[in-house]
Image 1 (cartoon, protein in one colour):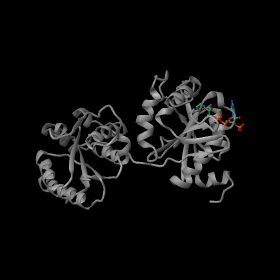
Image 2 (cartoon, rainbow, N blue to C red):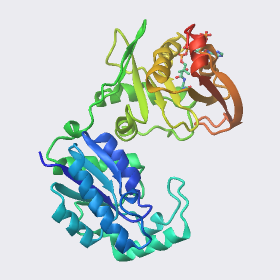
Image 3 (tube, helix red, strand yellow):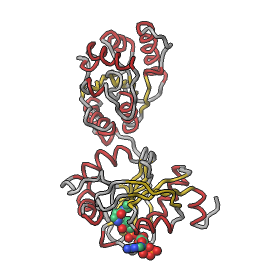
Image 4 (cartoon, protein in one colour):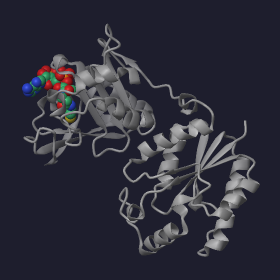
Length: 354
Ligand SMILES: CC(C)(COP(=O)(O)OP(=O)(O)OC[C@H]1O[C@@H](n2cnc3c(N)ncnc32)[C@H](O)[C@@H]1OP(=O)(O)O)[C@@H](O)C(=O)NCCC(=O)NCCS
């Protein structure tokens, strides 16, 4: 099958690289190439750009994969060059946030003066509305994951395959404990997940970012935008079910590579509290975090006053390191406790050798 080269085009700070990288994470058999890192660097764009385009063509020739995502801004002549020289299906996707958004601080990227000037030139030159684009997309209001998922859906039409065949196949690990199964969450779980999660008792203990009242259908949306695109790459989220009722999600436990600062979160339906269920669920997940994913240290957080959550950390070897101001859905909570658990501490708490 002919290789597909997908150029993610747009001005500086339109999100090209972040989104192209996320796309390469969710589409199967592909690599991501950062255009800015190619070619013979030269402050004269007229000299540098042709060397980048040659490098793209060269990479496409050499890389043995079906799809190649390249983040690079394109002019008409660049597009024509690629069309002429690539022996591949060529697709351009243009990210087109309004100029004022591209000029703002996004994902904490502080723009230098020359970049601000260049962004304005790029918008004047029409990089944000190239007419050879397969898709021109305003991503101003979206997270990079949301944009990548949206584009992936569009691309599957062009690639003429259903989305699930284009998505990377990842064997999500499941665990069995004495009473529980921890398994991958699927769309069909949304109703039981929402029924058990969207209650004030559960949500009031969570970070202020979780909406309350919880919107109807919010869980499915959350699965599609936050869980599925990151599963097994930047995050791992398990649904918790009872062995004798494997279709009802009664809780969930997740790990995140990039903590904020916490790397783990969990919730359980209120009717199951106080039976040691979360303590049981935490064990295989911590083993997986340290033994398979390769964390050396995990950070946890809970509202100061959330005694159940605190107790789980105490029981599983974590160390309280500080108290700091924070906001929760229940505004009576004003502070959070930050905890750490190293691989050595975890092994020690489980009586395992390092
Ligand atoms: C936190 C949560 C997951 C705990 O689940 P769980 O299955 O009830 O937890 P466990 O039974 O494994 O452990 C809870 C521990 O807290 C103890 N506990 C329960 N109520 C308590 C209270 N009011 N004061 C002090 N300790 C309490 C339990 O006795 C148990 O400790 P023990 O085993 O030493 O007896 C659940 O309460 C929940 O989902 N809460 C809402 C969401 C939430 O807070 N998520 C965590 C955000 S950081």
